Image (cartoon, rainbow, N blue to C red; front, top):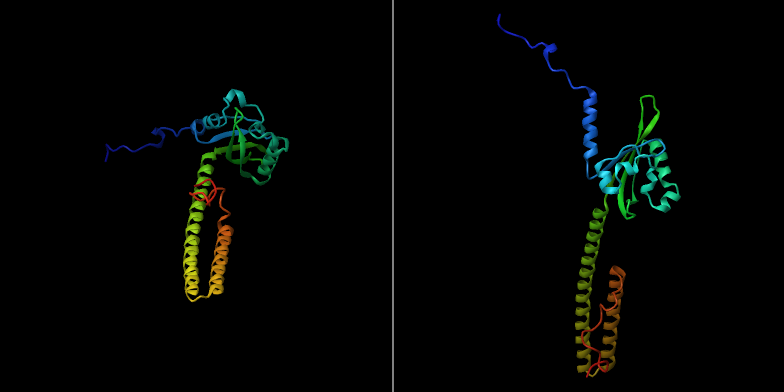
Length: 231
């Protein structure tokens, strides 16, 4: 049709320049709160600082940019040059990851998951490192509490199982002893009682080997033994 117009690529809005995408990504990283994300130069000095790093580590950007990242490590780790070994491994293998204790500005410690990535230019020269740190203290504490709860539940289960076994053996052994006494077989009755006590000791020993010995006071009777603190 004579009145039809065609879309001329020259009339379209030009694509945003790459630097706009880079700026958007920089702003995104800067605003991330749950992860400390920052850059290090090849020697380990802090070059950038995001909101997550400020929140997790406690430093403002003007306090930490230019400082060596070993400041985030315990004194023992820093003296042992552990931070330098991390950078060396990241440079050699491209990436380094670990979980370990880190130190905040106020001196408190937290358990961190740390990933360090080496950054090279197009000519293969090391330009620095990207470092991402996540505070996993609460997660690890929750995992530990869950493991302790599961272990405690298993101890109770084993305790109930062995208590029932002891009870059954005692009932059977005492019934046998009573039967032998009724037959005027005193030695046989004593033998039955001895075997029952030995079996109870075996079961208790097995319980200890599976769940550990009882804590002090766990086996304490509610009533005092005859002649001790009672009438």
